[in-house]
Amino acid sequence: MVAKKATKTKPRSKSKPSLADQIADAALDMAAREGWASVSLPKMAEAVGEPLGVVLAVYPTKGRIASSLLNRIDQYVLSQVQAIDESETPRDRLFEILMIRFDVLQHHRLGYSALIRGLSRRPPTLLMRAPALVHSMALMLIASGIDANSPLGVARAHALAVAYGTVVRTWLVDDSADMAKTMSALDKVLSRLEKIQSLILDKKPSSNHTADRDED
Image (tube, rainbow, N blue to C red; front, side, top):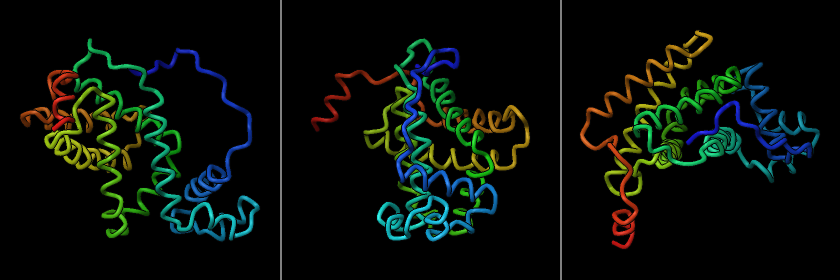
């Protein structure tokens, strides 16, 4: 289902990153050095060597930069999903996919931890981000072969968003080199969800059943 590390990948293009990516990269770097509170649009304009107006046309607010950085995680994880491996249980597939998310966070640990801590200090911002997090978790469920489109599926996405948030808090203080504490926390929350009837399916819904739901 997920691309293995030993699998050869296509060489990345050496073309210059888009301005949006340059700004986001600069923001992540500054957050790693000085904290998310230090990130500002004027500073980003200076960092990328562009007029403030040009930067504002790409990211009108600092929050848009945060959204872009968080969306990158979804994009990377989904790029690793090749197919549903029916030999694995849905829970195992979901565990693997969510650990890829933490691998991305770990690769840019200082920047993303500063971003997450910065957002967590602003409850209104967290509330605004909640729908995006639920959407992300729905994507993770679907990539794992678990329904997230039906009313029950939507409930799964919301439950997983809450569970994921608790594991992120563990990751923030996880000082182990292999993220052992994070993996243990993720394993525990998925076990709890699995005990709740139908939150984690035993098997992928049939395509016919899904189609019937869509028609309704």
